Length: 415
Image (spheres, helix red, strand yellow):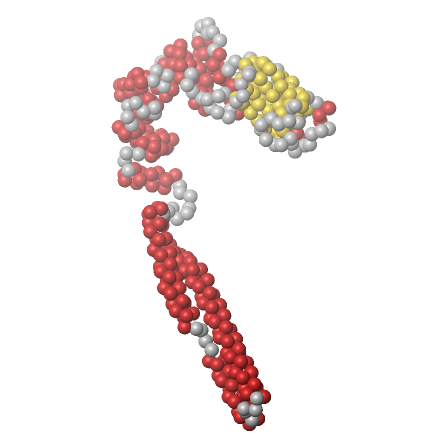
């Protein structure tokens, strides 16, 4: 904090200087004016006395010798007055009063400033920031082992941190330290309230950790935890995935298919891809057994293949570096469900829009049956359509089942 107070002292002196400076200048000006006025007054007196002497001489009351002597005495007195002239007593008194006033004002500046800072300032926050613990890694990127050790140390100091325990537990699981991961998930369940949105998911994670810690065996503890999880959330992905694994290993492929399809309802991203892979394996096993398996729509990944090109009429008006936005959105909707950015120089080209290009994980191609697809050359470079942009559109388009790419030509101008 010493740097802060040194800075405050320096700024205070500067502020005081700004207060004193005008008064010092005023004093100098007053003294200068006073001296000038007194000198002028002495000159006037000299002239008046000299005129009197000249009149006395003309009247014959003074001879030449006396006149010269008295004139010389007047001149000597004038020179003496000019040399000794200084500030008038009134000016000195005014300056002393002003000095008292200025001094009081100068004292009020730091006093009021410090008072305001104590109320409105952030000295406490600065103190905390200046005394934060040093970086334990000395600016170096920590190794995974160092990061884990640091997180473990922090959780010893703050054991009621569910986010920290979740990060540590998932890291343990990724390292194959399943028993420690299970213990971490159990700690989270002890901290979280039962009605927390994450409670069911953490229960599922705990069941999975117990499952892997038991060498991938469905023990009584694992099953009890799965049942507890599904009682809270019947579509909890991890718990249903474990039941699917157990059924598949028992070659109960129909049960495995049922569990994994249920889990697929809430899954997305890599988790959904993994579940689809399990569904395909279970379906193929059933077909190999000669069983009739109905079509499974969940295996038809939503995607739209497009051949995008620019019409000859507009090609001459476009430049190679201009941006091309290709996107799909629900028919009549505004939010893109999948989008990709290209350049005019990329045209013609083929584009496949799918769930990996979603702008929002909750709004994907898989969430609808039909979309409208559009390609637009943006003259401004911005995604929002503006007057003068070139575009092409096809609507409606099925998001599943299409085998041949659609031809999308940019041939219109935004009016």
